[in-house]
Amino acid sequence: MEIQDKMIEATKEIFSTMVMMDVTVTAVMHDHGPLQDTITGMIGLAGKRKGILAVHIPYAVAKAITSSFLMMDVEEINEDVHDAIGEIANMLGGNVKTILSDNGRDIDLSLPSTISGSEYSFQSDKDVEKIIINFDTGNGEFLVELDLEK
Picture 1 (cartoon, rainbow, N blue to C red):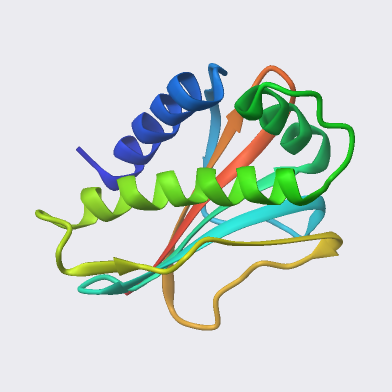
Picture 2 (picture 1 turned 45 degrees about the horizontal axis):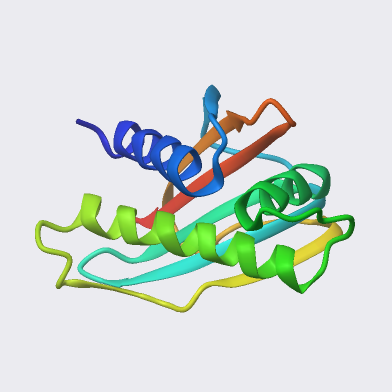
């Protein structure tokens, strides 16, 4: 099974069990333009495979995801949203680590971090293989991106 298929499986599993949302894949891409009114949760991978896993979630979708995840109404992009999106990146990072490594011991993960803004670009300065999967939540779409150094 390809990395991409396992990432889709892991994302669906995390969203159905932890966020209480069913997500569907709408597209698989190798690039995206500037991100607008978006929050990105990311986690770095180091060791046998190097790269970054990121989830890019538009504000409205991030609020819906956080509301469902924390079981409370979220009206604005605040610390709760950053924490929730960081935790989703962390869970996905753990899955990707298992996918890329037989025993998980030869890849280390960074702590999750988040960035957000009205418009920003997200790209690696290294030669990377990009897998970008577009998911639909029913409340809008978001991207899961894996950039692995070649």
